[in-house]
Image: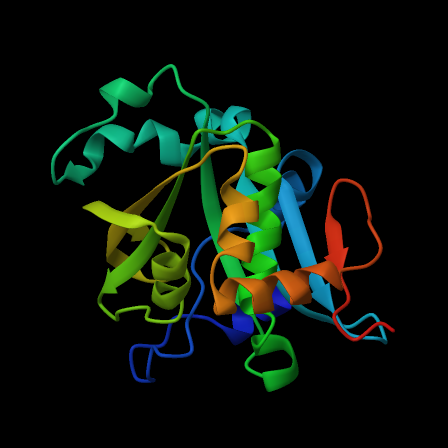
Length: 212
């Protein structure tokens, strides 16, 4: 995971269309594997081609993201109505820039989102970097899921300095994943990819799209 993070590090000199990744130390990733939803994408040889991290409500509330929730510049609404709700956070989606892995990015994201839905979460949030480089890779996935931009937040990362991120919100219900994966041609294709996921390593789930 750390090696993939390094491969996808923020570089203002390169185009952002392929996406980049911020945050998380080795200790943080170890904590995610123990307490959050970490889903891996691997090939037939077991090489990891990507991962997704989703934070369930207890992990989210214990971390820095929740502590900074009041710093979000909301465009209507706010956190008050969510304080007693079950809230999840889609923290990271990282896939190596190789087509065999990249085409499964949406299925990997759906797998992690499904874990939050199955956990009874009512709301899922995600942040997407806008400045100094706009991260375009995740925007189509957010749009396809029906997530809505609700504001922005200023953050600081040791490796990147000041970062301005847009905040996206997706209300979820028990039938959210079924609806997303069955009501459109794109959703059905993603659902077929997701159905090919095999193997499970607790608490991290492994997707092997190239398995027979």
